[in-house]
Image 1 (spheres, rainbow, N blue to C red):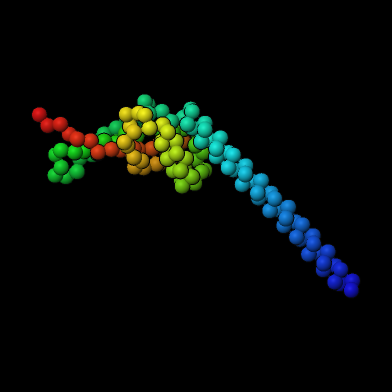
Image 2 (cartoon, helix red, strand yellow):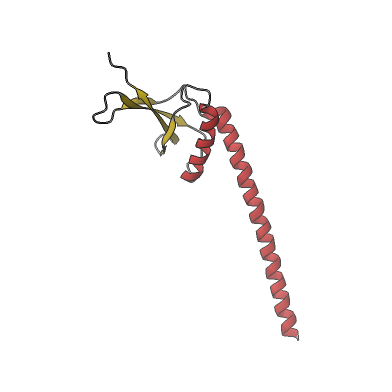
Length: 135
């Protein structure tokens, strides 16, 4: 009977430890969600500026004289370099929806999102098909 009580006590202690760990994980997940929301809000308000792009250009597909792909590349600071690219893409897409809605870039779509180790910045390239005017 003593062995049974000892084993029961060990199992109860293990269950309690796992329950505490689960609560810790739940708190951690909530903290991550809040951190992501704070980061998203901060980026919306402070860090994505479409008036300060680093370069732009036209890509003309071979044989097409009437349309070109206009692209614009701009920096996004404030996003940790350690974030997973899918999280960064999700953040940037959500922010772009609101930021681009009433701007001259409202019809543009995200082409690429890259991280520059040298500049410690994320760069986002957006693009849109434009009509070329021939005179």
